[in-house]
Image (cartoon, rainbow, N blue to C red; front, side, top):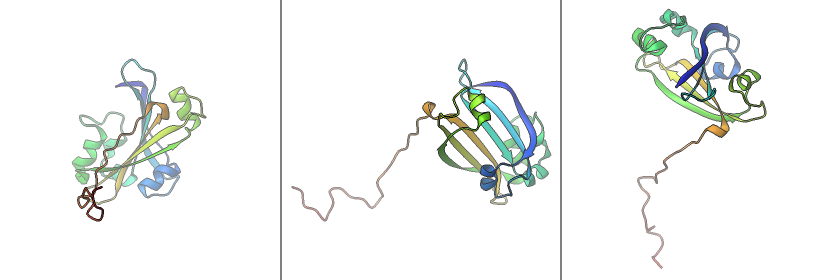
Length: 162
């Protein structure tokens, strides 16, 4: 994948959605890492914004720097005892913010898919980071494999074969 522009790392007031997922108050000054990426040769495809819990930043101050070294900010969090981090994804459709629409070169009326990956510390059991990937909905296909419950049987015993 290709990065468009320069990724940013800054402390900003935490918006409502990542605040909800991190379990802290909206408006809390929080480290935000942001990058815009796409497959090589394509225009901007997704906006990925990571918010790192202030307690995790206190544990691993390097995560607030632009260059965090090999393995990136996740390795720094795991090295100070939060590893192995596990993730839960929340996927929803919504309209982009004006900033997201501009970054992706799409109309604000075009729906996007938001994939929110919440990273949880193995040490504390609490979220240490959340990454929101915003992708225009016409570029996303969700595929799931569904299986019957282990107790399901066919043919059903309560019905005779006809």
